[in-house]
Length: 194
Ligand SMILES: CCCCC/C=C\C/C=C\C/C=C\C/C=C\CCCC(=O)SCCNC(=O)CCNC(=O)[C@H](O)C(C)(C)COP(=O)(O)OP(=O)(O)OC[C@H]1O[C@@H](n2cnc3c(N)ncnc32)[C@H](O)[C@@H]1OP(=O)(O)O
Picture 1 (tube, rainbow, N blue to C red):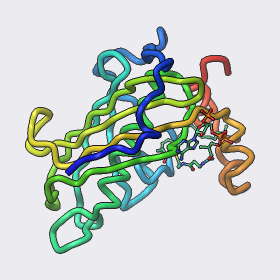
Picture 2: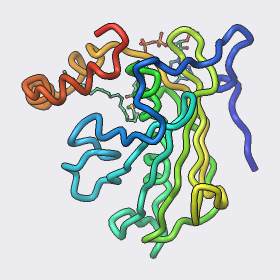
Picture 3: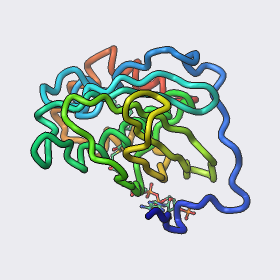
């Protein structure tokens, strides 16, 4: 069973997404956007350590290996962790658009159970853009990039300025991030007009 709510259908005057001319080349490893991100950061012991690469067009691919720390039922990945992997992959699209955006809505279908030690092969693409609204979709497959779809998602991301994080984040982490030249460089890499 699959159905998507109407707010995830782009309006008639939405436009096709445009790959930013300075986007990383297809196949290039994107790296983390924040060291302590649960999805992609190296600084989270039980995080997903998801490694994403730029794809063709406005797309990315990623791999996530399910670990024992990610269980819900015995030996199986927790659904929320799988939704996180989809959300993180979708979030990585913004390296290719060079836009900072946050998840507004994420709708997920869980089609197959995903065992511990499985590699989930993820792919995400932007389908349309309407003002600040970025419509996108993602799949997670088992056995290889062309394997059976185990999870999928449709999502709406909303473009924000870097001030979204500076104004809302806990001051101690924001201070540390702003004092880290690598972090400032990474945040700017998302912005077309930093
Ligand atoms: C130097 C220091 C650096 C520090 C920063 C470091 C790194 C930063 C770099 C990158 C990080 C980027 C992202 C993180 C990456 C990956 C993680 C995975 C992604 C996530 O995990 S990210 C976390 C979860 N995420 C949130 O934490 C969002 C909480 N939320 C809000 O902060 C607001 O809610 C917001 C901003 C979304 C909107 O607020 P807003 O006031 O700006 O805009 P507004 O409400 O007007 O919406 C504008 C148009 O979007 C439509 N719209 C909005 N929400 C909708 C919904 N849910 N469903 C349907 N339509 C929706 C409206 O209907 C309107 O549509 P229309 O224009 O047609 O009227």
